[in-house]
Length: 216
Ligand code: SAH
Image 1: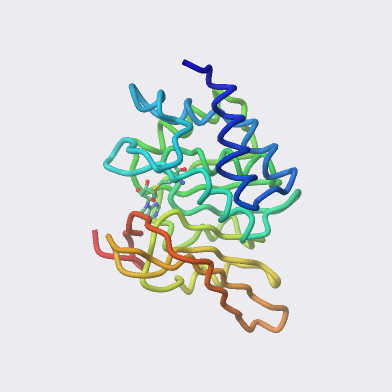
Image 2: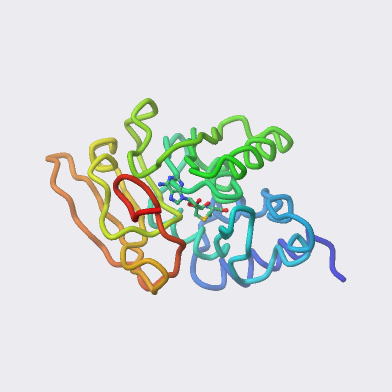
């Protein structure tokens, strides 16, 4: 069997670069983060599969390509302050942290928060903060953000996220019904406060559960 470093490089080339996402900073971020360290037990062996995988608390780690598409669409670049809603394993937050200045990642399941915090400490990712809470309310103490990305789907973009976004900021979020195919939506907040919307295609995410999301 190939070692993880070889599998990781193959993942970056075949699943991300070959599909048109070839920004050097984006590819370097995926090369740097060991996805196997964000999975438990036997699932680590499948870390570089082209798919989401089960994690604790009945949730999933996103497919690497979808994480890449989200980062690219949200225009995450050096120095950005980013909020991720739905930290889960912490993998996407860790990758974002390789590119951005600061990341706050909110997660509602305590078990996942504890595991993700431990991973950030072990891997030395000091600019990624994993916090427990209802991310449908954003994270007011950390605002304003250059980008807000959601790893869980909702019926609409929470008002609090728009309020916590800088002028020129971007939100990338799956919109649609729970347990169905959703549309990955990009919302840009312009300098005059107006919003524009862009449809990035079909995706399938777990539901966002909370005050401005689905009922738990
Ligand atoms: N980015 C994650 C994907 C996790 S799946 C990764 O790379 O592993 C989405 C996560 O969103 C789940 O862990 C789920 O518990 C969380 N979630 C759902 N609703 C939430 C809410 N209102 N606030 C914070 N997290 C939420």
